[in-house]
Each structure stands twice: as C-alpha cells, then as structure tokens.
Image 1 (tube, protein in one colour):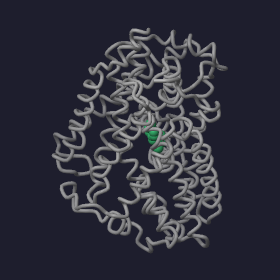
Image 2 (image 1 turned 180 degrees about the vertical axis):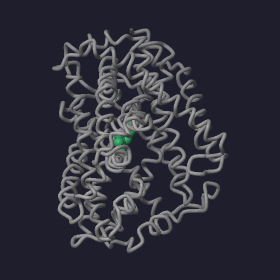
Image 3 (image 1 turned 180 degrees about the horizontal axis):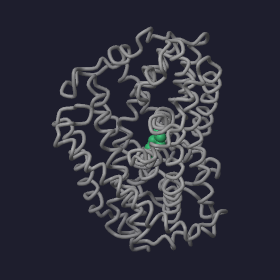
Image 4 (image 1 turned 120 degrees about the vertical axis):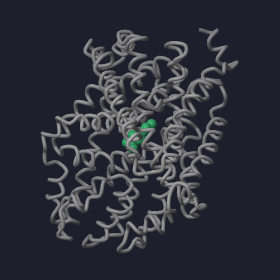
Length: 502
Ligand code: PFF
C-alpha cells in the first residue's frame, strides 16, 4: 500500500485534532448544557469528566493509533482478534453522523447566503421551518427535496472531498484556516455579546451556580456525554489521525493541549451566546430563560438570527461572522469523520486511499439525501438522538474494557512514557480500568432503562411514532452491529499478507 502518510508537523496534527473536536457541539451544545444543568456548578462535573474520562480516553486513542499505525478496526484487531468489530462499529457510527452533519452544513451554507439580506426577517423560526426546510407534517412524509438545501449539500460534500482528497497532506492545509478562523470569529462575537446592554443577565443565566443540581445523576450523565462528543473520542477519528504521527511523537501533551483548547472554545462560546441572548431578553423585557430556546438547531437557525436582527448596528456583518464561525467549526469535524472511515477501510483492504475516499463520499452523499428532503429533519433528529445516547457511549465503554483489561494499560503507558513530556503514572490505570468503565456502564444502563420505560409508557422521543423510532433508532443500531461483524469477518488478501508479515 506504499508508505504511510505523515503530518507535516506536530502543530498541524494538533490543529487537525482540535479541528475535529471543536465543532457545532461547542457552539450550541455546551452553553445550554451548562446553563440548564447547574450553571457554573456544571463546570465541576464537566471538569471531573474531562480529567477522569476525556483526557485519559484521548491519550488512549492517540496511543493506540500511534502504536499500531492503523485506523480503529485494524488497531483493535491487533490488540485482540475479534475486537476489530468494535473498530468497525465506531467507524460506522462516525459514518452515520457525517451523513447528517453534512446536511447541517448545507443549512449553514443556505444561511450564509441569507445573511446578506437578513432574509429571515422578523420571524426566524417560521423562516427556518417553512422557507428553508419547507418541513412536512411528520417523518412519514418525505415530500421531495428542497433544492437550495440540496445545492448546499453538494457544496458541503464537495468541500469535504476537496479537503480529504490527498489525506493528511490536504487536511493539513485546510486546518491551518479552519481552526484559527472560528476562534477569531468567536472572539468577535464574545466582545460584541459582552458589550451589549443586558448581557450580564445572560451570563448570569449561563454561569450562576446551582450546586443542588450536582446531586442529580442526569447532570453527571450530561457532563460525561458532552465530554465524549466534544472531544471526538470513541469515533475512531482520533485513532486514525494519530496513526499518521511519526515514531517519535509526544502523546500525552498533545492530548492535553487538544482537550484544553476544545473545552476553552466551548466555555468561550457560552459568553458569545448568552451575552447576546441577555441583550435580546433585555430588549424584549423578558427573562433570559424565556428567549433562550433549548440550544441545538434552534439556537443557530432561529434564536441567534432573531438576536442578530435586534443588534443596534452591523447585523449583516455579525450574521456573516456567526455563520462563518459555524461553518469553519463544523467542516473540520465533518471531514475528520470521513477521514476516520477512509483510514479504517483502506487499512483493511489495502486499497488506494483515493479510491476509498471517493467511494465513501459517494455513499455518504447518497445516504445524506434522505435528510435533505423536506421531512429530513425528523429523521436527522431521531438518528442523532439514538446514535449519541447509545452508539457512542457503547463504543467508549468497550474501548476502555479492551485497553484496560485485555491489552493492559501498563503496556500502553510503556509505549507512551518514553516519547511523551508528561509521564503517565499508575493513576492512569485506575481511570481506564475502573472509573471510566464504571461511569460509562452506569450511564449506558441508565439510558437503556430510561428508553424501555419510555417505550412502555408510550412516551417516545419527541413524540415521534413508534415505527419511526424503530427504524431510525433500533433498526439503524441493529444494522450497524451486523455490518460491523460482517466487515470483520471478511478476510482480505491484503490483511492476510499483513498478518503473515507480523
Ligand atoms: N466534536 C464535534 C463537536 O463537538 O461538534 C463532533 C464530532 C466530530 C464528533 C467528529 C465526533 C467526531 F469524530
């Protein structure tokens, strides 16, 4: 298959890792999670989750990729035969995510265009659902395509293809822009947000501590869930990226820098979002909680545009800054997911990466068409919910079991310590072997029990019909498991040769 590609420099690798980690989740998920789960007090479980699970897992993924010089399936398979399945599962989850992440990017492209005229007018929520999406009555009615969304989708996939076409070479060139740019944009939005009247009320809503929330297991689950999603761990992406590191590369310090930069961006985003929402509440004479919505898509496409309308000057500029920020935050997360899949496939089959890249993007594009239909948002919402609540936590749990108990963390430390500035002590084993699996196990079981109770009570996610939940949630999950097993079972000539070489 030829020589493995290498990152141009340590900085570029760190940029790529931060680019993957810092995505839409930082801008629209973290601030709301903090605000609604105890405000400033949420920072406590969040940092505990970062230290006990986020950073240890990031170190784990970097070291596994670096040591085995392969993407997640091959690397896990080398640790123990059969566990290749787990790598495929991670990669398929990534693939599912990128198929809808690309559609969100498509909406952002639409909004960049609409920003020029502030086309959402006085009713941004109506504009989003009726004009941009032209949403149907439910998941049973797809209603054909919305052409502007389709065009945005083609642009999004073209941008992803253009970035990953030459692997880490082209990715390296793009992340030089897509990492600093959103940080600059965020800086501008923070300053704008904090200098508006009423912003203090918004910040107080964001960070006012409510310590009683710390007794609620939900808050802890939210903190751990946010850390995993945000750091892009348990998707195979960080394993793939680290497999391109040269032999002598720092691991621990790189992981800590990536994690802290990512969490810093999240924390900062809260000031931009809630500073501005404080101002909007002030203008309307309402409480921040009443104007804030609940984050996610609503923040980006309804609430924030409304706040932009109310700015005293420069609305078009701030709209552009906001959507360019979302675009540059999201695009490097999107292509990292594709790169993870491509590395997984080409490492197993020994196929040319270019060919695998084209194939992955083509299949991804075709699947993403579902979400680009007028009823696509419903499916996006269902799939996103299930993949996040079960898929990711499941991968992370099995990953720590594999490395902690089967491979043994001591061996991992022996690989990492000689090449890293910061040395891992036996405390690391305690996290990977006991604390992280325990926490993940509790969250996963808790999510499963909750899901069963909800199904029994007919209290289905967002009130969707059962058949839609069964298809978008359970059928997708079952398909991923079956496909992971099938992918592992296919022995390739290339893999046989590699096995013999060892
Ligand atoms: N970490 C990204 C975010 O916070 O938006 C999402 C993500 C990107 C998850 C890439 C996983 C991944 F591999």
